[in-house]
Image 1 (cartoon, rainbow, N blue to C red):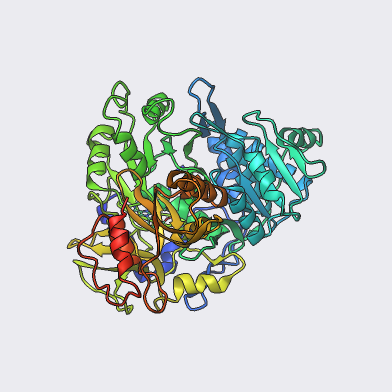
Image 2 (image 1 turned 60 degrees about the horizontal axis):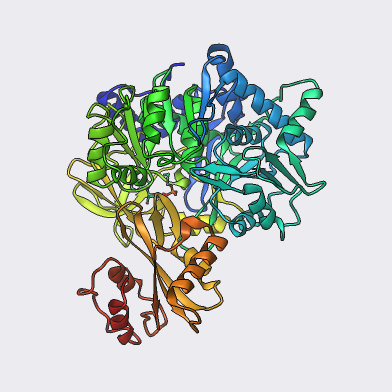
Length: 637
Ligand code: WT7
């Protein structure tokens, strides 16, 4: 497969960028023409950011799975679509060709239909990283059901909240999942989540760990049994549902500055066009390359750059079930050597954690197949960038530092491997089609280079979020109301003298822990669920490996046991309410929080103390009780 929209050199980047700004509709119309449409669009774009109301490829008809599967069968049918590496290196890996994947997706799509799933229904997917997860996602897309993948680390309570919010009546899960030396009982977590969710009609359970599970009669069915049923029905195909360009493809929940996660909605056509376009251009994918994105499909990175982008491009995507440090810290390097991986896309957190093991685990592995390295999810510090460059890329591989968000669907700002230059700790330049701007507090655009401000985007791109599920007003207020006629990212950034962007981090109350977004309000709500807690305030602090760590100040009522035990109880509560990813790294018990006379918590002070700053805390004169600041400083952990 060749890609008409692949940019080939720096001049090509410049001219594509210019065209994308002067004639966005012409630009995206050309890109979209290389996909398979049941019916072509009438108009490329219709939009306003006021409501917002954004429509790409108006009245176009398609199915994304025909683009990811059917159209490749003639040319790539016997080529590997997915290479699956299990958690345990002793277990056999799997290679799934495009033909196999087409068959499996069709079969499982028929299973979904047999179980009553229809176009527009929401299906929650809570699985480990096995090929059946990708198959489940694609099978939903095949029949037009809206998938909502929930990362396997979230708790029963988090799943229940998401099921309610989306009114999801169907669930696809596994008995359990392997992750390093752990065996996570996914079905049992689902059972806990469903105690209060009577509206769930069917739970389809795939076998992976053989952990004992309880199957509720009439509601729970085994994946394998259901496949047997459709096999005996004869026709193995499942015709793809014809979808409107703007029909929702999936919901993915992400944290914001309030306590309740938002269901970000992406639509069929725009998401397909942009993920494929960005995949091919950022990584400079060449036919035959093996692409290894180490994310979990439970996050947007996995949706866009393990499943949809690579498959629509006819690429070979490597899916890894395990973790970077088990059985040892050479796991990634083993995999690269074993499959001759060409593109490695991972998170700065993983790089920093692997750096900590020294060069021993890297040595003895042949990494010469690597051509392109990528990072995503958080700012990469220069030390980690150089380690990645020297010891993994051996100074031969461009590193793409890709900035984007769950809401953007695909990479918006990044260098393009070998086409535009990288710069340590900088995401660099926008992709053609993306128009970033920096604004000051008042929303005034900051022109020229060498400035810093809040990062906004002033024109839509095809994979921009369309709404937040069930609450369009929330979408408007969150992203489109802060600054008029702009999408506000929630990030701060600076633009250097050459026009390169450097993302400096969130400017709202959202933390980025190991590349995962966590709202401080969400963690506070979880901590406050503990019976003994009066109130709490959560802030981030710099963490060597995670990027940001979670620091919680907790006002506790009556301390019965010792502090250490109470801390454990609070951690347990957070694990129950959200999941282990939201557990605070530090808990400091305080007798009160620094509040203004109007009752607002002065987080600035808490942040400074957590960062280790005790001298310049700024103006504390408006505090109700300046005395608590002394106590907080003295009790710092
Ligand atoms: C937030 C989005 C994008 C998929 C994974 C995270 C931060 C993301 C970078 C980068 C600096 C980055 C931003 C953004 N972020 N990529 N290359 N450099 N910061 O998706 O959970 O939606 O989080 O991650 O703060 O807003 P997400």
